[in-house]
Image (cartoon, rainbow, N blue to C red; front, side):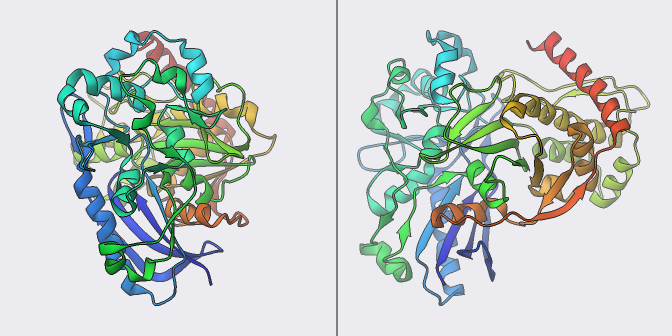
Amino acid sequence: MSLTLAIDVGSSSVRTMVFDEQGHAREGIFVQKPYTPETTPDGGAMIDPAQITQLIYECIDETLPQTDEPIERVAMDTLVGNLMGMDADGQPTTPVYIWADTRGGDLIPTLDIDRADYTRRTGCRLHTSYWPVRLLWLHAEHPDECQRTTAWLSFGEYALYRIFGQRRISLSTASWSGLLNRHELAWDVDMLKHLPIEADQLSEISNEPFQGLTGEWAARWPALRDALWYPSVGDGVASNIGGDCSKPGYVALSLGTSGAMRVVVSGTPEQTPDGLFVYRIDSQRSLVGGALSNAGNLYAWLNRVLQTGDEDALQKTVAEIEPDSHGITILPFLAGERAPGWNPNAQSVFMGMTFDTRPEHLVRAALEAVAYRFYQILQRLQPLLPDEVVFIANGAGLVNSPVWMQIMADVLNAPVYASAQAEATIRGTALLAMGADVPPQLGKGCTPDPTRHAIYMRAVERQIALYDKLLR
């Protein structure tokens, strides 16, 4: 049986599991190590590169003794939109800046480029979650660190560089950087002309694996001495594949710390749909959709600030509230905005509160507000979808909340099924490395209610009107 050790580096923990070629996890093999990104009042969001790589290696350390079967490959996914610098001696020159870091948005107007053509080439937007704006900000705010930097890379690349001494970036991670020409599958020369870096400071773009541990690494992990080690992939790509959404008729609805709606298509669209992204998975496929910076993190923030207490009791109380009966409109931009408006300076707004507003009203309004943002993504994604689609939800924030699942089905006006895969992202990482194509499975579903949908459409219009008045 061919086995894959899969590593998932998300926004709050590093996890490892072992999978066979059918995507089945080896029972009882699971390691998880939590961590917390550093945040700053000015919008910073960072990870210590030494800490995160150490957690990755420790997870491998603790996983290997749990199996005596041969492991043929090691695969990793990471939260994408992350960037760090490295010097000539292979030492970090900066923290890891992640997608949630909103600093540098004021530099976007200084880029004298055709934005529409940039988006057509790269499938990305000029936004703080991508490398071009982050690099401009770093050179403006931290010139000494930039002067010492000889390579710019993601921490997934860095973790493997420390092991193999080579820099290699997968197509999906490169595409998520905002610097890949998705049509040519090469670094975007036109964009690089406007940035204070050179092309040789970026890694070789390739999905080809490394092989052959030596020295201390071979001594540390003899069971992986001859394994294939694949360049880290974007967690969004892995989530689609592992959540059984690898074909156009299956749309992934992911909701964890952040959120996204994504679909896999053949090749790559000539144009990037308005407000959406297009990332390459490999030379044959692309991932099209939109990402939300505010999803499960909004719910968690409300629970913490409002001190709502017992989770089950809160969910039950929220479920009893009629759709949009609270009269509250929320722009849920605690971490800025990505799709569809891509406004890095957007901030959260709560409008419509009265003395009768209770904590459960705010929570219900927040769950609905996130669903309304997903609806706007769906409207833009519709031309790429077949007549009949299946929405498959993954991520604990959504799948473990029946009320949020029902809200999502009612807002989208389509059945929404829970993923049958408890660990979609890490499973997808393993399936991508194996090149496996397994049949989709569906969990429990929610059927939409047309009456509630009509109510929600008026609320969507109200949210859009507030957005246009304050943020456009």
